[in-house]
Amino acid sequence: MGVRAFLRAKTKLLLAATAVAGAGAGAGAIATSDDPASAFKLATAVPLRLFRDAATAACIVYDYEYSLWGLPEGSKERERVKREVHSRSALKLQELCFRNGGIYIKLGQHISQLEYLVPDEYVQVMRHSMLNKCPVSSYEQVLKVFKKELGGAPDEIFDEFDPVPIASASLAQVHIARTHDGQQVAVKVQHTHMTDTAEADYATVELIVNVLHRLFPSFDYRWLVDEMRESLPKELDFSNEAKNSIKCMENFRRFSPHIAEYVYAPKVYWNLSTSKLLVMEFIDGVQVNDCRAIQKLCIQPSDVSKLLSQAFAEMMFKHGFVHCDPHAANVLVRPLPSGSRSIFGKRKPQLVLLDHGLYKDLDDTMRLNYASLWKGLVFSDANAIKENSTKLGAGDDLYVLFAGILTMRPWNKVIDPAVDHLVVKGTDGDRSELQMYASQYFPQITELLGRLPRVILLMLKTNDCLRAVNRALMEGSSVETFLIVGRVSSEAVIESKFLHSKSILSRLHVWFEEFLSEARLFGLQFAVWLLKFQKALTL
Image (cartoon, rainbow, N blue to C red; front, top):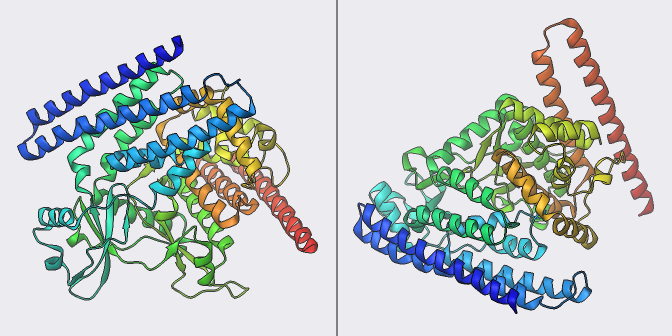
């Protein structure tokens, strides 16, 4: 009973701290705001949201402690009950995110990508709800944004405007409209509550995370709050998003002209766009993880998977300017407008990248260290993995764990010379193994995430998004996608070395290294062909 009393005391402390913070945030809002009506609305909303935070946290803590009370550690019964509590708690957290909205939904989306850190029940619940079932702003709220940003109602600005959104996300929702000259466009409208509560939500989420860390030291998500505090203001500025989309396309034309026509971003209508309204060309495509819809377009899902891997490998290892939110709802697929087909008669795909609000710059040093790390991972080079993981901040004590998080494979598989050593089949066994490692090494994973630069944390998030999409397209990861990553990362490293080679001898050394890399990649590709041939014979 002493432990339960201790937990009750902790929960009361959490409730008290959030109540005090809620009152403080509300009073501060009224004192500093130029709009008393909005400030009063905020001051009354913040304590309620904080109370929901505290009550949800308390319910989850009690559920874990009481449900697992007396069950032997490591027993099958404890594991069964724990999974049930995970499911209940994930649903409670989902409800909290939806009721509070905005930043909380972004937080839920982050959790949905943390397969290596949180239980699978949380990942699945958040992944299935946070991407496609976000709350919708009313038409009255949309009207308010239009009048403030463009000085008129939607039906005045456009010839046609559908008041029912076709999609809603954490920060905004999208409507279809038609301009007065007949162009069909997509109109992205920011949710009004993002402006009203963003700053207060920053403070409250930060408070909750800090209090939980003090009460439960192994629970340390402060890095996630720091990242959201830095990235969310950029995501809320739609003019920044528009500029990012243009820069992304320019980078493909400049650094990756061989695939530039296969990647597209919708054209922006600058005269109708502001920081809270973004009007873009409407693109008719299907979600990148919808295999049936892709096949109906006479496109091979495997071609989409390979193109997705190459496009993002080019961004990470060559451009150094990376779209860090490539979940399924943000990437569409359509047939290449030129009508080109493969030698087998299939139409070639084009990726349409949406939601350009969250990008990260990799400086040359970090970009090349990251490329060298992935080259080492694909080639099973333990020394290169250790060297470049250490350079990126993992340290020489946690580089094995870092490699595991990047690949979702145990160390013995990471350094296995077999061609398919990084392939994750996505079976229940693979997921169980991953969850076992996440539970076993939770403190070390938390420490690692606290060490890594925030830009690398965003690369992890990007990596997780791509893995989820490729899993849907290929029913697991594919050897060929890793070969693409190996090739692009090798090219980036070699190009940099050529650029910095000053003497003939150093150039000869780089040429020899390039020859060895190409020979190894060819060997791996040949092994893939053999595996495919053997598989075809067994069918």
